Length: 247
Image: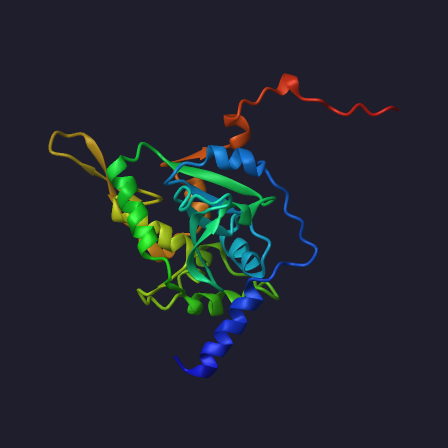
């Protein structure tokens, strides 16, 4: 790579990965409950409080700016790497769950994955560790930070699909989308209805290109279950202690 472009890309990555001043994320789940609830194959969506998060949330009109794949503990340490993700500064890497302590998150769980398919996704994701982030996508996103332009909703998804297409580079949600497409698990496929030979109507699923997927798609997909750790831990509203103000 041209040294000037490489240095510019590194500067841009550091700029985009800095936190937005004054932003205070609120945790929707205690990190210990989140840890107990996660299962290998889950997708962890993160609201994000970084500069790059602002652009992604604007373009997708969504709460979620980042997606990470949960593998389960990859070592015996007290804070093991257990998430595989792609970010502009480090590329594809494994990180601990503690990275997102205090963050607004959501668990999206594929339904009834077979052990064989779970292993295939795991192998696909771990094999991608070390890949670099698609910085062309980062350059494209930079245009939508300040000021935020009035981009029509129908164009926004395309704005996130402007990467270089280099197979050695990745973006967070597109990498995970590729992994699930690898085992033919649907996320948000295009669906057409045809008339079968027996006269019944049949839905045919068409694969959408992985570059068109964003973090919010795992949330709104009818094929992923939204899991909330507080409820899974045994939520009883009658046991809550409310502060009683004196008027």
